[in-house]
Length: 261
Ligand SMILES: Nc1ncnc2c1ncn2[C@@H]1O[C@H](COP(=O)(O)OP(=O)(O)OP(=O)(O)O)[C@@H](O)[C@H]1O
Ligand SMILES: [Mg+2]
Image (cartoon, protein in one colour):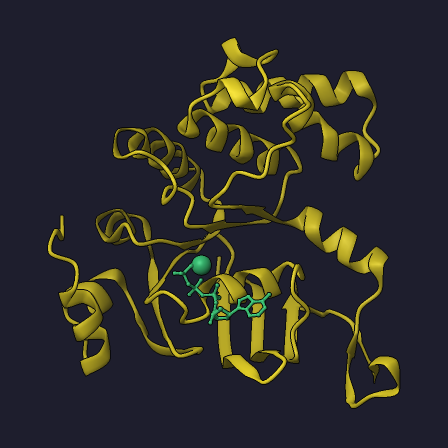
């Protein structure tokens, strides 16, 4: 149970001159649920995106199941860094699934086809097996009656549940959620949080960026407060959200008037 699934060391990300992530270290144990909080622009999404290599880290290393990703080299004859092969990143993305704020479903595919797509193209699963696995996952998120619907006909909450089913279908070891409820109308937030809560109960390893502090409090084994691209404070939900030690964490939390914990 104490096994480290992900180990991030000294992660940096620069966009040109803009230094966004400035040396993040983070270890994620198997089955651990981590909530990442912090102000807008502090680098939370960038950290998650680096974790499944939608953004290439500028510096630092990421280990998955004890295996260091990439090899030492020089990118385009430039400075020394890590080089990642496409095959390696593709494999990694099936093991580290991601759910986005904006769902990112294919509009021209039905719900079922959206969930089957990755299984067929990336995992090379047969069509029949993909259909059955996708149906199973869609049942789990309560959408069995929407298999043939197109995303455009669904509510935001339903679309997000499709996106979660799609991520689950790949059987990832780790699930990353980037503000999965922040583009939803308030009345739809609950249905998505319930699905995430059910996944937590299953013992899945999850990292969740969220502004839903009440949910984070009940969800997280550990809360990580990011400020200016660094881990400013971390601890249990009780430590960070109820009894923050550092001034900046306190100031951030004070902005939330409704704190349901
Ligand atoms: N592709 C990019 N190119 C240039 N700058 C970027 C890029 N992606 C993010 N940034 C910048 O990096 C900084 C951190 O962005 P990031 O999206 O990680 O913040 P965040 O903590 O997720 O914020 P929010 O809570 O608003 O989602 C911001 O200043 C942003 O403008
Ligand atoms: Mg973000």
